[in-house]
Image (cartoon, rainbow, N blue to C red; front, side):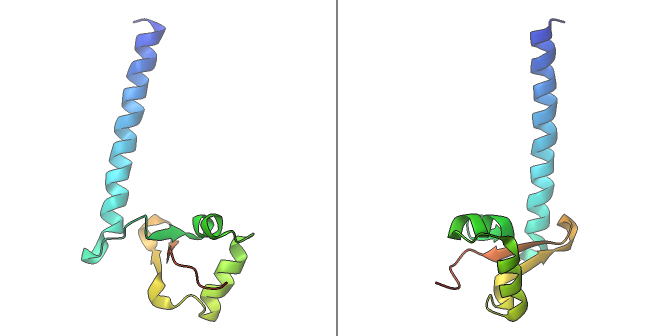
Length: 92
């Protein structure tokens, strides 16, 4: 087997594992019959990036203080307790 064929085979294996991981993550996100569209729900970091907030602690504080209402925050235990936030601007 040439190096090119070996690399192609490794790439296919990596992609197959990635596809399986994506399926598992979607199954977790679709838990309890609720579908979380990842265009509408963001991680804290991605929320900061999208709305120009300089650090994640600001958003975490907003969650704790109720500025971001509880119904707009989802914590996914199966994904290491990652928080998803509804992608709307909460403060100007």
